[in-house]
Image (cartoon, rainbow, N blue to C red; front, side):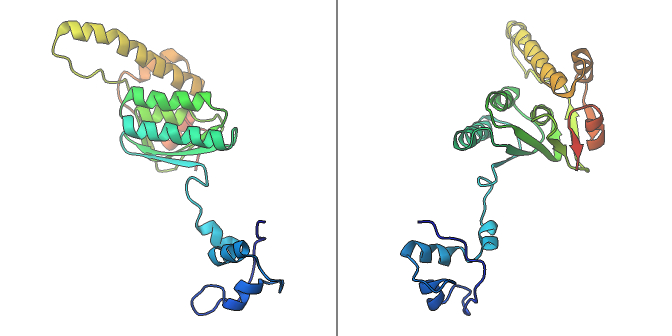
Length: 220
């Protein structure tokens, strides 16, 4: 039997319910052991709210470089939230200078295949692949704090010692770059040719400029 919340009581000097309150609650009836335990742990509904975690709020904080381990953790967390409450919103707060395009793409594709809409927030900055994740959030629920900056550019293909390696890999990175440009174009209702043109050099945007381009929906 689940205890009903106790809204008011007079705590003793220790801040915990006193012996009489633990025994009878506000109604004067004898509490079960389970009710007394819950009463001890959560004195008020407001107190319980203070102990809510990011998991309780279905919130993911992505801070720092986009790389394999962090990407795997983010994907696992989204799938856990989806399994627990399918279709309920997930909040992703982003503060990242970017990183691996492939690891970021794993996050984007997970966002697009689960039923839970992912609301994205930029906190401070979202550069390169982090911007792609930000823009790929649920339409109408992509936010950027007023003082934040975003940046868009082409992906880096890295360095190769042999020309044959460069030729072989170039085609893949060219297609990957087009794929990311398509995600940005679709997310912002822009022409892909314009996005690809913008990506040829670093383009730095304020929060309002990002909104004007359709990369986010609201500046907060």
